[in-house]
Each structure stands twice: as structure tokens, then as C-alpha cells.
Image 1: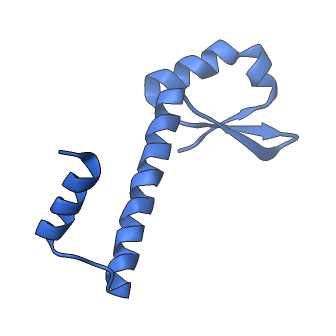
Image 2: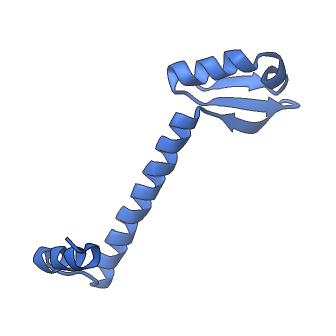
Length: 87
């Protein structure tokens, strides 16, 4: 169940909102004049979310490459990585 709080709580109960986000790793949805306005989460959760999105994007790029036939065998890919990184 989403946690929904009014925008006034950002000023009046900031510490409570911060503690909740850090302890539960949940997002709090903030309303303004009764309508959804913001989503508040801890920096840890934000970093996790953006990391996941980056990984999903890379996976999608790989799937798109496979569909287009842009693929190479493992040994060639490994050799390419070694050459690019100097390993």
C-alpha cells in the first residue's frame, strides 16, 4: 500500500518522512492540493533504482542487437574486451 502524505508534512514532519524512507526503503508520495505531486525516497533507494534502470537499458540494447543480428561469439567478444582494456 503506498504511503501518501500532504506537502505540508515536508516542512512540518521532514525528520519523520526521512526516517521512514531510510528505515523501510519505501517511497512516500506527496500530494499538493489533494493531487499527486512528488515521490520522495532515500538516496540509497534512488541510486539502486537508477542502477537498475541502467542495467535494464544495457540488457535491452543487447536484445536489440541480437534481433538485428549484431552479435559475436564469446571468444571474439572476450578478446575485444581484453584489447580495449589492456588486460
